[in-house]
Length: 148
Image 1 (tube, rainbow, N blue to C red):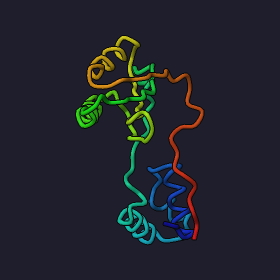
Image 2 (image 1 turned 180 degrees about the vertical axis):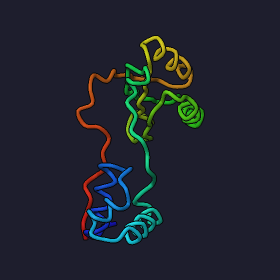
Image 3 (image 1 turned 30 degrees about the horizontal axis):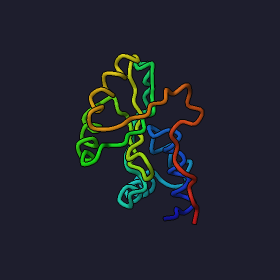
Image 4 (image 1 turned 45 degrees about the vertical axis):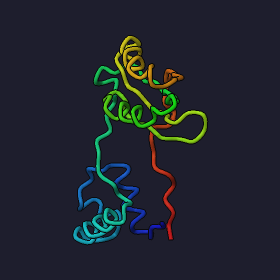
């Protein structure tokens, strides 16, 4: 799906600051506030904009440790492991992938001990391989916008 130049300006502005006022957004896009509002509504209907969210720093909330966990459920345990991952709030994100592992997940925890406790909850249902995150040189970002 491609975006026209105006939609691209709106999406780029919202990526930078989702709390931008309609007035400021309209000025950037070269439209009226009602025009921008209608464009945003259509972008949401098309599934381009899924929502508006605050970006939170886990460290500011006491989660000083992040880990990437590759998870390979034992035979017949795929759905059970997926349900566990969904229920454990320290799993911040998870992708179901092809290859040797079924899931690649990101955890945020206050300590190694808490990481061990979480991994112990799935140890009898899956094999795991864990890497501690040292830094995040690229924060989550959208792919390049394609202009029609």
